[in-house]
Image 1 (spheres, chains in turn blue, orange):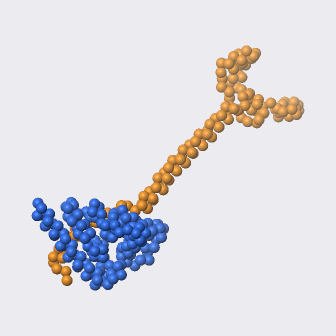
Image 2 (cartoon, one colour; image 1 turned 90 degrees about the horizontal axis):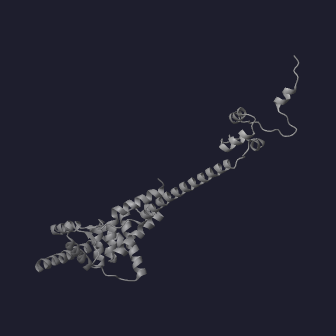
Image 3 (cartoon, each protein chain N blue to C red; image 1 turned 30 degrees about the vertical axis):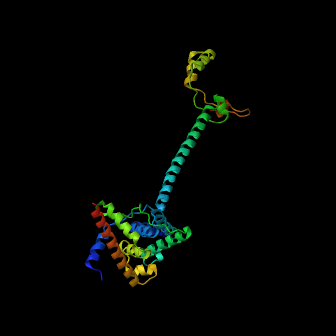
Length: 169
Length: 134
């Protein structure tokens, strides 16, 4: 197996391993599945063409940074700020509880952008606060603080929705 | 500090799994050359069959167009396959031959000797003319 084929296989393996979390992160930034999918594909296709992943020390954090840059660059080109699409699912819910999935998505959508990104990166991307701090260009303390705020808001938002649903029944 | 409630809530959130993205476009692209390779192989096989068939037809037509008489072929210095016996050729032989036995001999042992060009003699004829002194 040649070096190019080897790195391409490794990149495809990383896509299968982290693709879902990267797509979720891109969706949390763009609010649209189509744009998010394009950004993730764009990153991986470029990596396969250039074979430049071997230089990255922390490959997972590097992939998240690439996706973030791709979304930001695409956002600059498009010059638009789309609200989160309420009809596109982000998660496969436990026990096929699609109402809970919608509830979580709405709660995430209600968070400020920086908090939403931190929650997604830590919870589903499984990055440490230090890695997230490097990625976003802030300290790990700031990341931790944003995460705690975001988690509290999510819990309040989701429990309020669940209570209102229960009361309406 | 995270509270037990926080940890429980985090565990609850982690039960939601992110959607799997569509396959990479490169995977689809890498499949395309395989299809084109199969197509090319089929085309090459079809072309080879056509070429072989064409050559076969040419050989056959060449045999059909081979010299019709033994004399023509012999003058060209080639081996002539036996002409098939037909009613027409048999009748022609019977009409011209001196006897029935001669006709049968002609059909059974066709002459393969080539007519000599002017100025040349066969070795048997030369030996036959020599007088051997005993």
